[in-house]
Amino acid sequence: MLSKEDQRRFEQITRHLRESDPAFFARVDDRARARRGRCLMLLTIVLWAALPALTVVAGRLAGAICAVVLLANAGIMWRYRRRWL
Image 1 (spheres, rainbow, N blue to C red):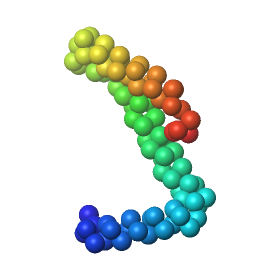
Image 2: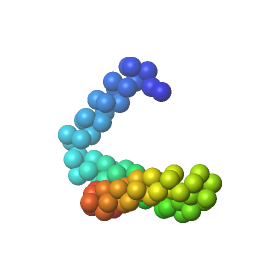
Image 3: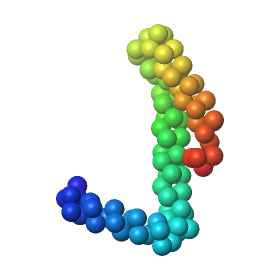
């Protein structure tokens, strides 16, 4: 964690960079967004793969609830796919 003074200074540097070179800042920001999207996609795939084991271990109701949540997640990811790729 940064101290309050270091955090303030970091925000000043970031603000200055955003104002002085917006193209560079946009590229860096897009990379971070894409990295988050890839991590979320990987997490979704792992959860889908774990769904059968969860159903066996925790029962059909837990598996059904997890499947509904994952379907909603897949729908949201499909809807906002441009933000994450």
